[in-house]
Amino acid sequence: MKNKQILFVTSHAEGFDEGVSYALDLAKTLNSNISVLMLNKKKLTEKFEDVMSIVAFAEEGDFKTAQELIESDLNDKYEIRINALKKMCAEAGVKMDVSSAATDLYSAIKNLLGQNDSIEMILLSPGITGAAAVTSKELNRLVKTASRPVVTMARNAFAA
Image 1 (cartoon, one colour):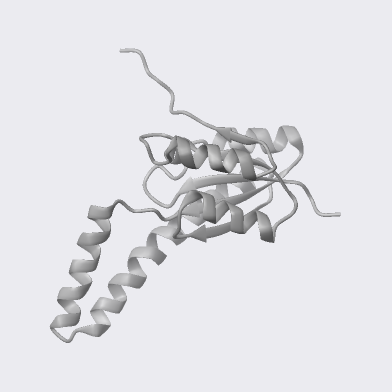
Image 2 (cartoon, rainbow, N blue to C red):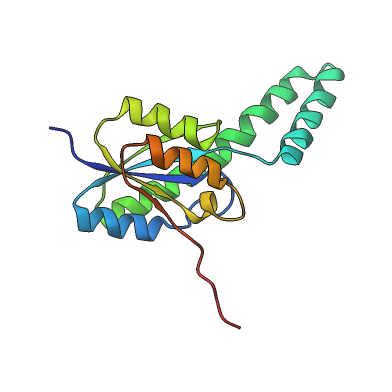
């Protein structure tokens, strides 16, 4: 029998670690492992800027630099963030595995649930649910079709 898991969905961007402490506490309480899904969903303007930089190098015939830009943008940040998550989980005594997706929330989760039947709960980080990163339509679709509890997290509001 596989160990039960919590699917913690977070963003590949800054603030990827928001909600990790809650996810770890929940995993320890439920005696579960964590499966982390990192979504790389850049804003349209960021994608456009990245593509334009890559195109500029490619137009000049510098294909090596263009390729390096593509690879370094994803790999460097991804590895640093994964290592930070691994360290946090190891310190908490929780096993984890990591997946990454460059697609919409619904498709990424649906694909992962199809591959991993030990996931018992979906936990969406504040970076995913906050700042209109996910629409209510997407969230409702996920809740209706996931056949698992979907837990959303919000950022803490600080009083001035």
